[in-house]
Length: 501
Ligand code: HAM
Image (tube, rainbow, N blue to C red; front, side, top):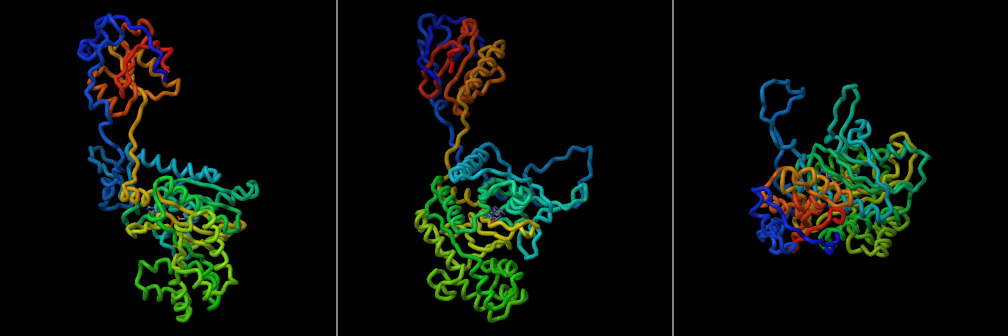
């Protein structure tokens, strides 16, 4: 916008009576352009409120609970008062929350772009079979699944990884490896609700398909840390716990536990912090492990240092080699202080085969912020050829809780550059023309659509954080001009419409 392009003012005729009080200083002068300034109440020039806070607190325990019925409710002609809350565990996104979501997703997208990833997406509704694995995962029991009208078993996706695997198989040899794909998508899990855990959430996923080396995991962790730094989270706020499922594989192999039990054992161990130890031991026994194997496994899981792990497993195995390489790469990337080895991390999804990691807030108040790992054999479980793969999922809910806790939520206001108002209802068409001209030049415009007193217009301008008020008055318009007021400074002038930038 070129503020210096002013033109000469001329006298104004009488204007709409309801506006005259506010407009007289501007339009009834015949001596100079704007001899007196608009008297704009000071508070209208300031942003009246900060819209930064995510108002999800009000949503948090909201949602319907109530009785459920398996068949649709009968349609009735009577007026029914509906429950205005969204279904339990789901969220509305009113503008202030939507601004925050867009800000978060923009950062997800920007970080993915910085790392050279391409965006993909999949349907929220998938075939149920895609998510059914035999390992007894929690996610299976949390599935939103049903039969569609064509008698197909379908499910709302609880995660994005199986869909990604499906698409990679479908693309086959038409894509060149490695693939570096990211997605931000809504996932559904019938979860027990805790802070940051809901029945609907969004996940940012980044996956690398076609790289067997640990360099891929190191790159993925680097991207998450890049994201944290962008949004003001530091290594003293969060930390990654990293291990490899190959650690367990080596223990199981020593005790001659069949390979096919591996996923099941991992899923049982993942619950170690949630269930009593006796229950875990019993479950491992039922899965076919001997007492000696269970004791050995639990001993290994308590290890928190790589040196100790190497002393127990020896240095020749892949588990130790992979982890050592990852930690040395972390030094080169410069994020050693963000990560630590912790053998108890195994993750709750059956398909992981190598390095696994989870990120937690250091105060231990929240559930995992993100998690991921290597899943080299997922594709063959869907009938495809295996391709080495690894990735992570990063939810939107826990990170927002953490940002709130740390006072790091950004102040995000609604912002429209211009507010355009006709000073007479006969000029509504002219005001539309002004708005269209500005929009054509890339400027955002809130067009006042009804006759409103100027007091109302100023209030609205403050609410939408407008930078300029453009007034369309009869006399100016006859000369092809409009009145402009810069709302931050109070500066005002008239300008030809075609000069308005
Ligand atoms: P996940 O650990 O099940 O992994 O989920 C990843 C992240 O999604 C969690 O760390 C958390 O931030 C978020 N999340 C999961 N469930 C909920 C929930 N009910 N409410 C709020 N947030 C939630 C996976 O889903 C893997 N598919 C990730 C992956 C991608 N592995 C490889 N590539």
